[in-house]
Image 1 (cartoon, rainbow, N blue to C red):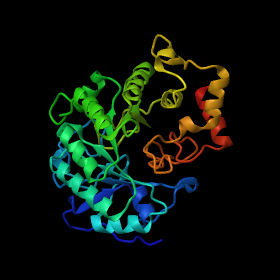
Image 2 (image 1 turned 90 degrees about the horizontal axis):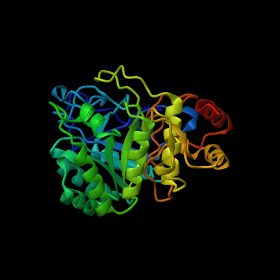
Image 3 (image 1 turned 90 degrees about the vertical axis):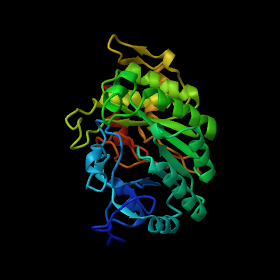
Image 4 (image 1 turned 120 degrees about the vertical axis):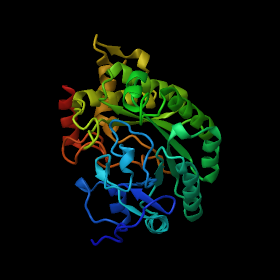
Length: 352
C-alpha cells in the first residue's frame, strides 16, 4: 500500500495546524504502509502536539527530551517515529475510518502554547465526528479552569502521566533541576481535579514499571489511583535511544506480570493492596486471593492485555500495539486476547 501523503519536507510542522501521530495510527489511517504483528488492530488514533521549540521538560526517559534540539528534529517517542500531518487531513481520514476508530487521544507537551491549541483541536474534532476524545495532559502548565475548558471543547477522558511510583523517583527523573520542572504533588493534584471535572472512572494515571521502585511501592501507587476514582494505564519500562536512561534495563518479565495482575485485581475490585503480602524486598507473594481465583484470573488473559481508555463499546480502544515491547512471542502488553500458547508462556514467565 502506498502512503496516502508524506510528511511535509522542509516545512515548519507546528500545532495547531499540524499534529504528529504514532506510526501505528499513521498505518491505521492510511498515511503509512505496514502490517501489524498477528493482525493486531489499533482502535485509538494517538496524536501529539508539536512545536519547533519542543517540550520545556527534559524527563530522563522521554524520547522528546533535550528541548534545545526542538521537536522539529527527527526523534522517536515510545521508540517509534511520529510523522506529522496537517490537522484537516487527519480529520478527513479519521472520519473516513470511523467504523474502525473508537477513540482519539491528544497528547500535550509542556509548552504554554499547548493549552489553547489542545482546546482548538478538540473543537475541530468534535465538530467533525462523535468519536470519543481523550487528552493526555501536561499538569505543570494547567489549572482547574483549563480542564473545565477541555471538557466543554469535547474531551470526555483525561490521562495524567504520573509514571513513577514514588516521589523520590519522580523528582529524580522528572523534577527538581534544570530542564525538569515537574512536581510530584502537582501531578497528583491534577489527577484529583480531572476526576472532579470529568467524573469517576473518566480520568486515569499512567505508570511505568521498572524505574527503580519495589512491587509494593508500585502496588500502593496503583491502589491510591483506584481509590481516588481513577483508572490505571500500565506500561513496562522500555528504554528510549538517546535519552539519559537509554541503558536502563527493562524490568524482569515476572515482575511486570505480577504488577499487571495487581492492576487488574484492583481495577476489577477483586482485591485491595492492603490484602497483598510482600517479601522483605517488596516483591508480591500473595494478592489476597485463593489459588483458584488467581488461576481463573490468569487463564482469562485479561490482566496482560493493554490497559487504556475505552471506546463507546466499553472495550479498551487505546490498545497501543507493541508500545512497550517489540512484536513477538514475549510481548508485554497484548493488544488482543492472549491465546492458549500465550497463556502457557505467561505462566512460565510467572514461574507457575
